[in-house]
Image 1: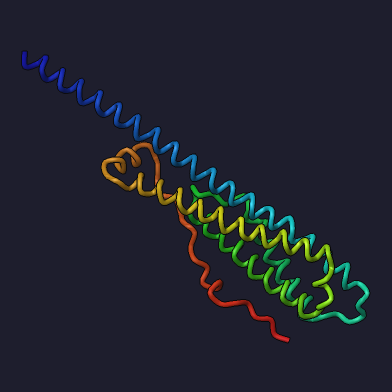
Image 2: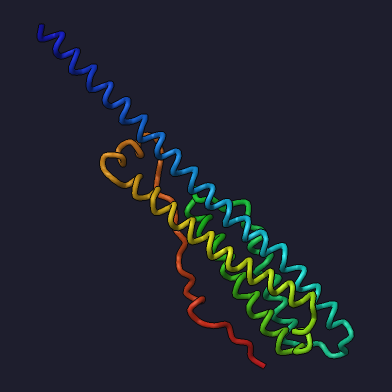
Length: 203
């Protein structure tokens, strides 16, 4: 009789563990998919910005083609923008929430690209004040500003879903199943220290 009781208790424990593990696993899969989906939306907006940058640079170059004088600050700012643009492009395919190191490196490059773009636009505004009235330039700036807002929005949404996922992974007893199934905490965006200081263009 004791043997059957033991086997019954053991079977009950196995059933409980099975359903608990299955429920936790399915929940974590859903939360991880939400993280990946949110990150994909951030990447879409990053790509949108990168697609716009060559257009705005070419517009400025076309407008300034008649100038006999080369504006040193615009040239220098464009060189900095090009370097930041190339760096972000090279790191794009390696960034993933599953790899905290590449994730942080890529987003740091995107922050540098954003600062370089601000410096370039400010330099252009100072060097070519008439360009403000150029319809194409104005339209590009409007689209670019909208893209920056979308990036901020999608990064905010990513932060929310990652928080939800990380809490689920770290809570007991789900953290035990997370370790067994290979789920680990995802990286969050880190504040860009340089963003606290407005970019300066010296003339």
